[in-house]
Amino acid sequence: MEKLSLKVWEEELFNSPFLLDLYEGKLPRQKFAHYLIQDYHYLTGLARSMAMAAARAEDLFTLKAFYTHLRITIDYEFPRVWKMMTRFGVRKTALENSSPKSGTEEYTNFLFDTCTKCSPAEVVAAIYPCNFSYRVIGKKIRPALRRYYNVPEAYISFNLYQRRVFSESAANTLKVLATGVARTSKAHENKVLAKFYAATKLERRFWDQNY
Figure 1 (spheres, rainbow, N blue to C red):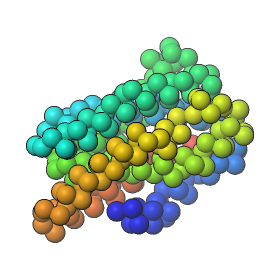
Figure 2 (figure 1 turned 180 degrees about the vertical axis):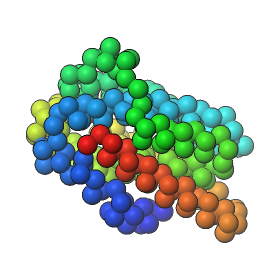
Figure 3 (figure 1 turned 60 degrees about the vertical axis):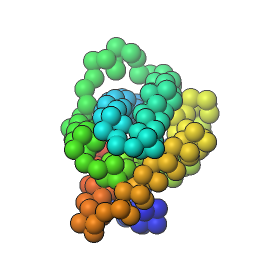
Figure 4 (figure 1 turned 45 degrees about the horizontal axis):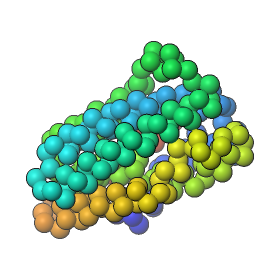
């Protein structure tokens, strides 16, 4: 999955104008603030989705893998994203009065539908583009936020994806994917790949809607 994903992302995700401008410090601060608000809405949908995936797990390892992903979202990502919002002038009232954009809503609906109806392997494929692409793009976003936007390291949410707790969680979710694909048919494997490709397109739309 890793080799395939990097190839697909190079062609369909990493060339987003939002990301390219951000890397070079050309993205207006207000656009990044809008992204952070949408990311907060996305994380809310992701947390609900992972709670459903964990509840449907049929074995302890899968339950623990999905629960850990949920816990990281709530205990690590939410606080850090809110902290970064304060560096971009987002007030609590503005966040409370905001709504998910159509791209965010479509993405979170896709995740919730997958987590409530599909196999664990399909769940992993659906969360993979966001979960794992951030490990790659975060290495470019972190220095850009420090250099061009004066964001201290302690405020940057993207450094979470290099931490051990995230790496261990990612490794376990990949085991769920590998086990799920190994035990099933070619038809199921095709469903897993379809979820990955669909999620990649939704991830790209999520970035572009804030540009």
